[in-house]
Image (cartoon, rainbow, N blue to C red; front, side):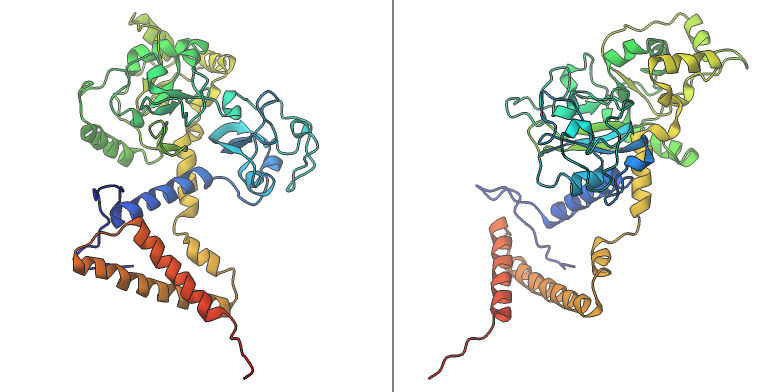
Length: 404
């Protein structure tokens, strides 16, 4: 639908009811659609992922109806959330790494998976936390939390994949936090060698802490040209009390590479020899390409495995890499055309004719507001579609004949 000048607007401040511009509505719709492609694009909505084993990264849901708090935690794949748990209370856990679908196993009692019922009793390599019961952060609270009136954002640790309120991270939030990866304090202590890297890699940006977002975005643009597959990601959610879904921002901040040690020498040993220390307290925010600066010698690789973080050396492990695959899979995909392709020729024509009629009528309806200089409210839009439905019912209802 194209609207010519004067621009048709919904009121921004019209008194009692908040209203929005059509551009705002369309932009928000595009953003939500883009995020849905990013999160769900790498998962199959029709087939249970169980036969694939422990999937490197996939969208995961927890069913509070089938596995309530107090029982054993369990997670289901995207397809099972649609087919096996429709109408249930689900917690959207965003994505999890190395996870195998639990739907229908021993944790679900007598419920069998409709898509792949032949499953073992449990998946011992799955990792669970309180997120599977709808609780987050060190405060162990739900999200959104009706009892928490403090505006805050939640950030996901890339190691344990739990979500934390910014004010509970035990550190000052970095500027442009959405452009970095975060490791919580507990995970830093489980892999203590990361503190040595943090002393050299974090907080050493050439432009200083006061640098603006636009400057760092310029750095990112140049880094992107040199390395088109981003390596890192931070997950972030809207302020507390807003729509209860987690939204991610998949771009990274530039950083200064740490000079490489002589060939054959362990990078970590070389860094520790410099004697630079960092206070081992609070979460750590890591800049772009920090993973590429980790040492990959045999000794360090063993340390990553012992600490349970070998995935830090895997470029495809990041949420951003997963999102990029989802976007690529849906690039050029039009949901309307996909739906039309499932109909026969006559049904396709009927749908197209009705859509064109609706578009023309809506354009004419909105144009009146533009000519009269009025704003469009949600009631006006609702009234339009109610009248449209009423006219459709009158056209399709059978004629009644009466004998005289």
